[in-house]
Image 1: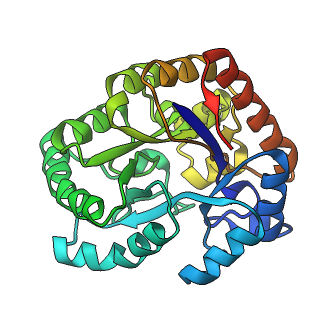
Image 2 (image 1 turned 90 degrees about the horizontal axis):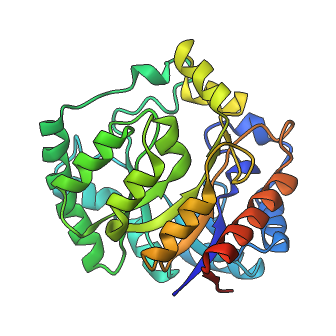
Length: 299
């Protein structure tokens, strides 16, 4: 078993806050990521949209597609409508040998609303999440039948943010629905990182290594700031620069024979956290903890 190390280009090219990263280009993101040692990158909105254009773009930078965000609306769409909405991305990701689509419910999220406190996110009861999970399982079965796993991304500002909500989603869904386990979002959401990983290790298909700065998170909660305010203030950072014990995470991944991508996703203000410097810090920390855990890293 081995892992691969990828990165989201969001530190150089933030899709939600483009003005924050206006001084950087996607070409710079891929070039510098590859120089650091990352072998994969998640898709960004400023990459070519067509499949062959994206393939050529990635090949030119000697980097693989290691996933990518998919904005879902299963909560409000029927099955046929949601299949139609995601089909193009699924087909593209199959063609480019992506390990998964990274799916999150966005029909009512507040994550992109800078004027809305993240505390004011939409919430569902347990029964409502279980019903949503059953509905989502049908879509996950369809994507799996196309040859593309669906890994659900629990995310701040959405209906699946807390540890309980992750548990309910996994309990109510079939094995076809996988989990994109994100350390930073789980802890920001008040969850127990290791308890959740150990509980759902058999469903984890994709892993985001994302650290947090607890003081910024606390300020966001106590002063009713938005998710985007939190990003700008530095709530997130790369592995090894915050408070999460990534050695424990790596040890658990080794124990469960995880064989997939570890992806750095750490959006922050590049004026305070230069992307190359911080992305290298994150990469070096992952190499260190994987080495100590006995997790082989493949090229």
